[in-house]
Image 1 (tube, rainbow, N blue to C red):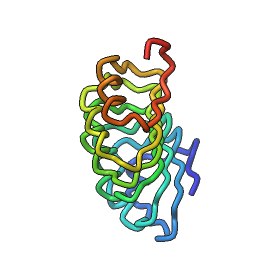
Image 2: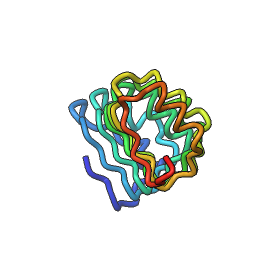
Image 3: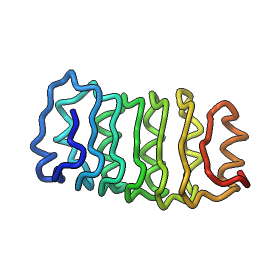
Image 4: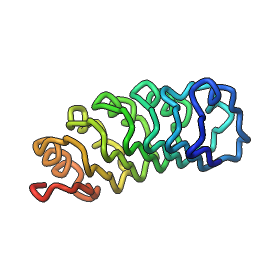
Length: 153
């Protein structure tokens, strides 16, 4: 389902009740902020969601994780998430790829993702990720690729 570049917001999203067969959703460049859980309840098979450049915040990530724990691919690039989102993301045991570029994250709670054994790549370009958190993560998960644009890492 592609809602990118639409005026979709939390109110209209909460009325959404897509078919249970939906596996992919694009909400990029929309006004969704906290992703009311009732908008996701009819989509138990959702595996891939793109929320890039939307108004999504940490509460929205928490709602998404709660409603769709089977997610494999998640794009949060350019959203309003902070380090608090990692507390929710650690519950996505099937997550394979995470794009969290151009966000305000610094790395606090980043170590919460260490336990996600299926995670193979995290895109972190354009963040304020601190070197100490990257080193700690790489030591614990050397096979997970971290895509970072800073040559110091």
